[in-house]
Length: 209
Image (cartoon, rainbow, N blue to C red; front, side, top):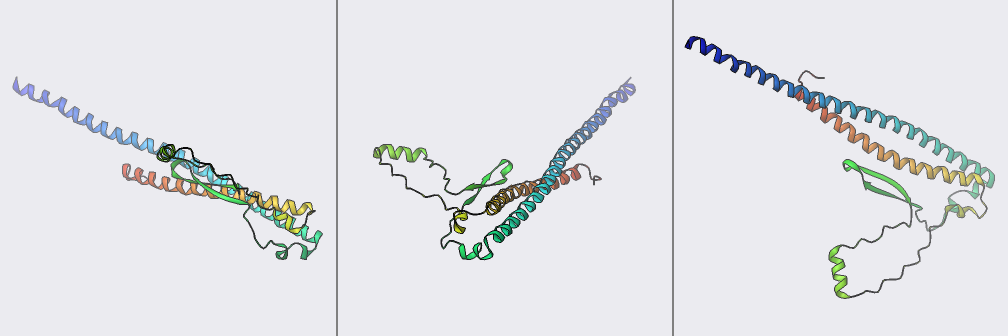
């Protein structure tokens, strides 16, 4: 009876080993499937971003061309010497500013805003407590800050419509340039994520390309 019991006792152990090995390979295959699904999703997003980038670059080139064409029309209407560096102001102030903010995944997002727009002052709890101890403080009167002068006024009061069109085209170009920079950051991040996922997949599946 012992000779019969021993082989029968070994069978479950051998079956358990095969089952354990199968469950391990199943876990690896499931992880590989999850990585492949994530790769597909990231690749689709990357292709969509690349298509959007190509479209925005085409629109940017069109806006810049429109701006130069309108500027040439304004020079033809007003005279070459009436629209040039001689009319520039001696003191120039920026009309727009570039703001950089941190979006999802730590990516930087750029935005063009008008000059003179300031964020409200943020007071921390420690500063608020110190102000309460010192008592009410006199709030400084807001300084009258004049808006930046419109550069179109350099060339006269009644400027042709083509000169205003040139300004609007270049303004649109600035907005598009900021959008393109933000989109390029997202594309670079997507490429690095894609390479990282491919390396992980190679470790799980050495034969994967």
